[in-house]
Every structure is written in C-alpha cells, then in structure tokens.
Image 1 (cartoon, helix red, strand yellow):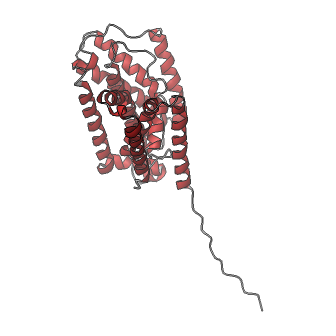
Image 2: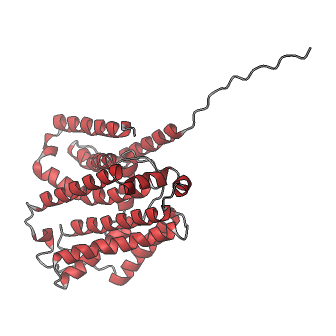
Image 3: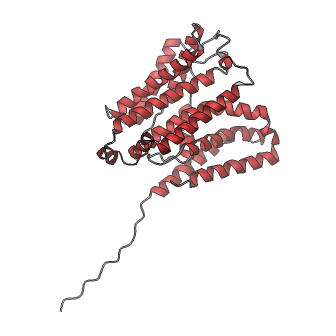
Length: 320
C-alpha cells in the first residue's frame, strides 16, 4: 500500500510547525496544545470509525446527530446517580445501536448509505430537539466532569484512550482477517462475496463500530463541560469526512489507513488556531481547508484514472 499521501500530509504538518515555531512560538505552549488536543479529540475518535466505513465504500453523514444523542443520554444517566462506567458503556451502546440501524438499512435493505444517513441525520436531530425542547442538560454530578479526575490528569487519560484505540484498530486492519475483509469489501464487493466473505455482515459491523466510537467521543467531549448542549455535533460529519479523505482514504473504498486519518485530523485541526496565532483572519480557515480537501480528492481522481496504451496493429497486406 502506498504511503505517499501520508508522507505529503506529514510534510505539510512539519512545514506548518516550522512556520509557527519561527513566527508564533506561543502556539506550542503546553496549555494551547492541550486545548487543541481536547478540541480535536472527538473528531479523531469519530474519524477512526468513519475510516472503516469509507474503506468499505460507504459513508455516514449522521454521526453529528448520533454524537448529540449519545452526549445527552450520558448526561441524563449521570444525573440519575449511575456509576460512570455504566454511563460510558451506555453512551457507546446507544451510538452502536444507531450506527447499526444505518448499517442494517444499507447492508440488508440495500439503500445507498448517503440516502440512509442523510435521512437519519435529519430524523435523529429533529427527534432530539423535540424530546429536549432544545434545552441543555444541566446540574451534572461532580463525578461526571473530567470523568471524576482532575483537570490536569484528564488529558493524559484521553490521550491514552485515543492512542490505544488507534493502535488497536490499525493493527486489526493489517493483521486480522476481519480487517482484510474490510479492505476486500471496499475494493470489490462482488468479488469479495464470491470469495466467501459475508459483505453484508462486514458493512453492518463497521457502521455499528463507528457508532460506538461516536458514542465514546460524545462522552469524552461532554465531560469537559458542566452542561451538555442538545445541538452538539453540528458540522462534525464534515470535519470527520474531510480528515479521512485528506489522510489518504479513497472515497471509493478499498484503500487508506488509520495513520493517514490521524495526520488528516492533525493538519485540519491545527489550521484555525495557527491562523489566529499568525494574525491571519479566521475567515481563511474554511478556504484553506477546502483547498486541501479539493487537492486530496483531485489526487485520488487522477490516481484512479485508467491509463490507456496504444496498441500497434499489424497492417493488412494488399491482396495480390
């Protein structure tokens, strides 16, 4: 598997870091890096699941709505006094159930994933707004914030969680049969099915796993605050998909890596704060991100374009 895209993104991150080191060294202050990491932690965890979905040739644009629901559920359960491990598992299970619903509709009812997830994105978001009347979850118990840890210790726990998930999933994709099944399904679904793979099960599994990761991301984001907004996750799907594509995962499926996704999250997540430290208008953030995404998609399109070769045909001899 080629790693040219990952190398290009890594080079862009290094170049941006060198510019900041020379022009705005305050960017690398410990507090700023900690805040930057925590702000992008939900994007990273959801992007891990989205990578699996896109590797199978599908997409899920409902993750922002699932993120909001899982966060609200976690807050409501915490207010009842339930132990935090139960709250955490419940948030993940809610996300997995909603993701599995999308996966079942795609895998077994055979509705295109873009249609399914668009419908559930709207239905879940409006359903949550109706259920909560738009009110935020307040009066959260003390053991909910920072997972009952100190504010100084929480970033290290969050970093350990993100690193463990990334390494485990990356190893599984490379070394386990289930990981190879994900790549095979995205490369050629019909050939994978004829080879004996249960492609419908693979599709359902990646959607459910991505939903569970979205629930975990919602929990880790919610514990940073003393209130949980019912409209959380707005625009999350665009950030996540952009990071996955920029990291080198082909939108058509079958090619990509979680390492590339991590680099994509780092690059896109650093652009906004970097512009602020460099004194550049924040309005340029979306433009720069859009240019990077367009370049990544164009690179994939050129890479997948079939190469035609001229074939010399023998000339017919004139009849005598």
